[in-house]
Length: 248
Image 1: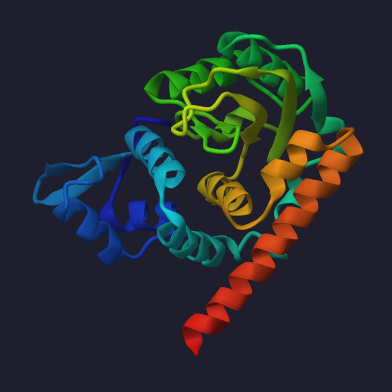
Image 2: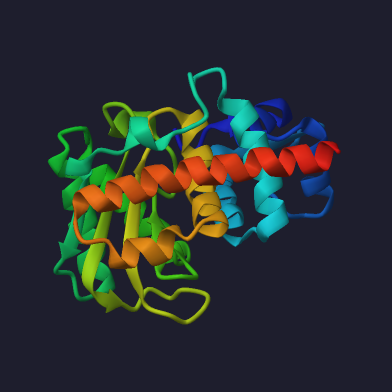
């Protein structure tokens, strides 16, 4: 329900933030909200779009801080910190997409997601992914884009999963560094607690490891899978070292 209203406590829980964090965002006029009946309310669809834009734009230290908060917020539903072994399969990877344009690569990635048999509402998924890209590009520096829905809706999927595609040729995708894009993730999360956390996790993997460089040169789907799995473990190990340095 993208138009569901959230209370201050509910939006803090959804974003894996404290109530004080959200209040500071309100004071800074950074988070979309409305003041009704003496209290702040938040439209979930607007919060989804704002939150994903914010995560993709976070600088290194702020991304680390937010990722730590989302990790704590999802431990109730996760048996381990690593996400990718549960979300990704070799058969969810296509190393040589023939896409030549932004529209065609989005279409090919949606078809890859549908090929898993886990998409329950393909038309709704397509509309929401396209709407998210119209809002602003999900491309990041380094040649990667993180496709995802503008609003999270659990009815779209059978469980949570991620698909990955690499195009044969570079695609102009409006990345902030001006470079073209070849590496595409599509996030399909049924559990709303995983949606933003998975987005932050892949950003961390790209930031803290050489994952993107290695993915550009990987020979096949199995190599791509191993790089993604290994990069997540490396990013988590780096996070733990950083935690220790901060504690010291």
